[in-house]
Image 1 (cartoon, rainbow, N blue to C red):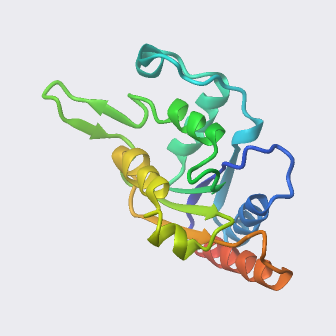
Image 2 (cartoon, helix red, strand yellow):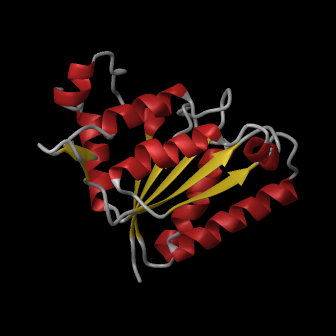
Length: 194
């Protein structure tokens, strides 16, 4: 079954060549070859300010680049979010992007009875995180707190699910053979649209 996939490349460096770019590229190429439709959102290339006031978040008009990202996410039935772990969490640029995108009346809506309506139901997601530490250590010792926050407080809160994750650890120490296995893994996921 063909899927509509939005890839959110969250590496803050606009220069390609990082492992995150390679993983997203491998996924996208395999997905397109398998007949899936793909739209890419390169967060580092977007122009948007950080949100500083609650009123801007709740009632402000999204900048043009954010509006286009929202349109791609609304179009998709599956999201791939790729980013490096920096200081135990996602890079600040990606967090700022998510704050801009996942606004009221796009991602969720407060009903008059005080309950939330999740506006992005019916979409699934995969989060891919690269890190310098062993992935098991990130999960076990640090509790993967930032990953869980993204899953629960942003994606899940908006109705996205299921949410799967793929973690690549010890990336600086990885040899070429290991990196090729990671790329092959992303190709396999891309072909399946997962």
